[in-house]
Length: 139
Image (cartoon, rainbow, N blue to C red; front, side, top):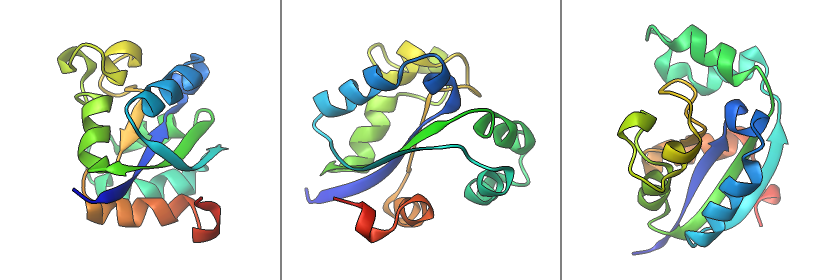
C-alpha cells in the first residue's frame, strides 16, 4: 500500500468534553503522522459549504448547528492506507454500533454527536483537505 493522506475533524462535542488530547494520542498510537493541525471555529457559511453534499438530507440543519456550536480541531493525517485505517480507528457512525476501543465507542454521545469526522474516499479527502489547509501548512 502507498502512503496516503486523509482529513479528520475532532468535532465540537469531543473538544468541549476535553477529549482532544486523548484522541490525538489514539491517532499517534495508530501509526498516523499529523501533517497539519489547527483549531477553528466554523462559521455557518463554512459548515454549510463543507457539508453541501448533505444539504437535501433531513439532518443538514442540525449538523450545521452542531458543527458551529464550538471549536473543532481539523487535521491532515498520513500513513499507509490512511483513509481505511482512520475509518477503522473512528468506528461506526453510530457509536452504539461502533467496535470496542474505537474513538466513537469511547467518546461519542450519539449518532449526531459522534466526536470525529473522516474522509470516506480519496476523492473526498482531495476536496476536504484544501477546504481547511493550503499546501504550505502541511508539513
